[in-house]
Amino acid sequence: VSAKEVVQDTFKRIDATEAKVDSFITLNQEKALMQAEKIDAAGITATTPLAGIPIGIKDNIVTKGLLTTAASKMLYNFDPVYDATSVEKLYEGGLIPVGKLNMDEFAMGSTTETSYFKKTKNAWDATKVPGGSSGGSAAAVAAGQIPASLGSDTGGSIRQPASFNGVVGMKPTYGRISRFGLIAFASSLDQIGPMTRTVEDNALILNAISGHDVKDSTSSKKEVPNFAGKIGQSVKGLTIGVPKEYMGEGVQPGVKAAIEDAMKTYEALGATVKEISLPHSKYGVEVYYIIASSEASSNLQRFDGIRYGYRSENVKSLDDVYVSSRSEGFGAEVKRRIMLGTFSLSSGYYDAYFKKAGKVRTLIVNDFKKAFADVDLILGPVSPTVAYEFGADADDPVTAYMRDVLTIPVNLAGLPGMSVPAGFSEGLPVGMQLIGNYFDEETMYQAAYAFE
Ligand code: GLN
Image 1 (spheres, rainbow, N blue to C red):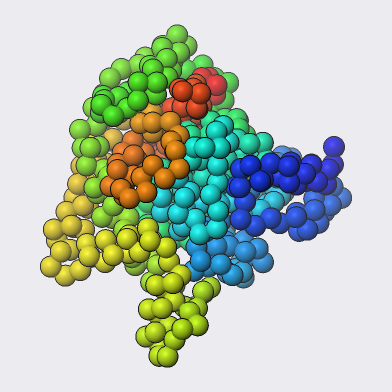
Image 2 (cartoon, protein in one colour; image 1 turned 90 degrees about the horizontal axis):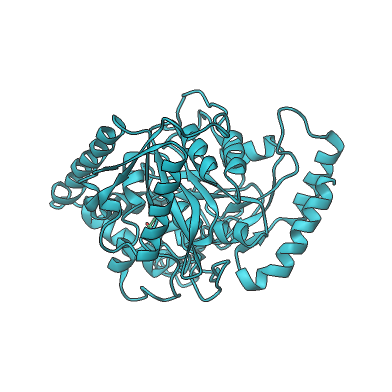
């Protein structure tokens, strides 16, 4: 088949399913078809094995000439003048961006419900949340609209929606992928990553978007391996640690059972599975909400009603432009984070909150370093639960925040983490989380593929 036929079919499928899933904010039909025609004319080469594959992009990754909203009223009309480096790399690889995917506003949330535009539905049960913040990226892949998407993960936003929708989601090592053009939430935690139906597809897309970028000084100069290089190799001889803190109270029995099955599978495949401890993990959520909100309060200062997007009509002075535009442009969750972050950074509270959080972050990092002296991979659930009803945490942000307890420590440490489908509980997908050592995504894909 031609790339053009593939793209045409993709839009037909999106048309047929979008009313049920609501995963896209913006479609890129005309340009995608033009790009497909070019690829058909040029042909697929050895350096572009993925040429012609349609892909969706989370709407906090900027795309030149294609609306990029971060699911916020603040950016409802933002038409970027450049592409994110990850998007440039997609184009270089011949992948075809077909549209921008729904998410929680500025990636703040775990259900995609804080989007200004629409509620994305879980691909398995439309009464359940798709997870978040990359809910659109996960549901679109799970619903068969597209074979792959890009998401972003600051505290679990790739892994948790991947888990809730039964797809493969990778948050690579911090620094693996350029963040240039990713609308910043918490710069020391944010990473872009691929979401796909299969492990191998995931590795191939990571190959396409990884690497050092002069435009992001935190992107790593480490050589980029072929991430699919160990796919197909046996896990015999690998040691997998299961943190006892990840299998305790609060983890639903059906989720726990799926992870215990996965442990048995790995043993049967020849790996050694053993219990480990990450004693400071339990402070992860508190540390995260101080650090992530502090960084967000700083990063979101740029949305002033002048430089980007929404500007209030209701103004008499320059101060009014700032205050009214921000008051009307940001949603409630974003405002909550800005207030929390501004408070944690303010003089008199900085030492007690922001500085202290940094110290506990180091303890969490050291837990992982100690663990990886003995194991090759860490295994546990992604989320303590399967997907839940819409509105479950409507008036209870603290309960909502606690749900990310198993994904957040990985971001604080900058480690790679992925979600791999590991069965079902109550008819809904359960994801298992594989955590790798720094820059060892290859071994994660090896183990994920062996399980798959
Ligand atoms: N759910 C977490 C939050 O609301 C993580 C979000 C993310 O990874 N972007 O901050």
